[in-house]
Length: 408
Ligand code: FAD
Image (cartoon, rainbow, N blue to C red; front, side):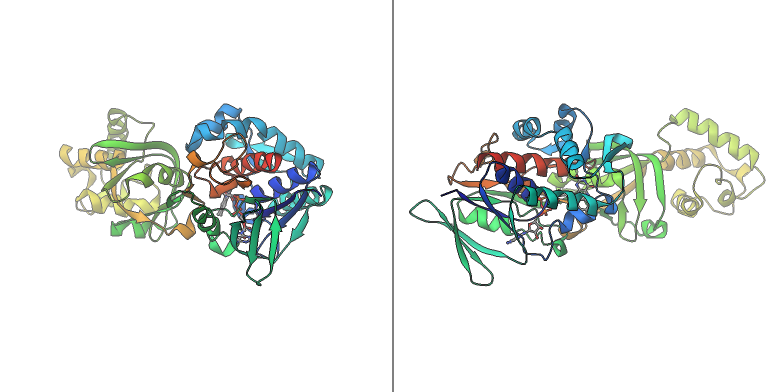
């Protein structure tokens, strides 16, 4: 009789794992608790799905934040080109955008899901929807007993846990896999939000809600130690800051939670202090007869001006030609070092990915098999690996899913 394989979770990791095992002629069942596959995949890339990243494999590894070396085997076994070719075979053409981000030409994540569904049918995988796994145990005769929420139980020779992380729980990723893994004796590395917006304690931030600043530099400090620095786009929100560089920053500062973290924004990273001073002097000359509050239009977005004026402690009605050198220095300092206090992350439910998960020390990186329980495999976000934005997290899902499917 053919091996019966259970794949738990119908996200990208589970779908690739199941189809890979199916292609090898195994008898594969994929159990998904939702009424459709890939609910989170549907949301990716703002509905456009940033499928993968077209960089070299070394670039993929470089953009992983935790446990890079664990992913070598997976990334080399199933590459970005492999997923692009696979999707093309099942009807999805792709294009490359800024930062090597790969998207479907149609800009529809639903097309990616449809292609993966076709792949599953092609490999004769049995898709079981609305089927929630409640409990898994290994029996004496070496097979696994799976208990479902409808009280049914079934038996399998191998099990692949591909239940995802703990964020965006409405998509079905409620962290069940961590509980299953723990029951088997696996260590779960602290679960934290990653790629998540940040809350800021200063009240003035709220006044900037909706303002997007392109090409700024953001740095984060614990005491005097710089723990992060990057350039890009920052978005102010009603609770603090978000946008691409802030999400990336969250991946690096989440290990300092509990310590006081300061965030410093350089609004004019292309200008040195001297060049900025010359620029401001030019504007102050041009607007010498105007009030301070009306003198910054050429330098700052309109919404930011009242905030900078307030933070400078310079009377907003003061005429520009009366501003002292010391006051001007204060303005320059605000442009170059706009300081904020980080007061926490938004909840894990708002995180793009979960950092932490099943310890990589307990999984064989070349097969994804548990080192603790033979016949048990892991794939995707449930493992303690995550990356920055750019298509890398989905590539982790496919590559680890592939190895699990191949070796189960
Ligand atoms: P998931 O996609 O979370 O799938 C897990 C599945 O398991 C779910 O369908 C869930 O319902 C099912 N499941 C859970 N428990 C059970 C159970 N007990 N029984 C049965 N089924 C169960 N990454 C990128 O690379 N590019 C992007 O553009 C991108 N955009 C994103 C946008 C958003 C808003 C979010 C939230 C994430 C984004 N990501 C992106 C990250 C990416 O979506 C995830 O890393 C990826 O989906 C993880 O895949 P997975 O298969 O491991 O888990």
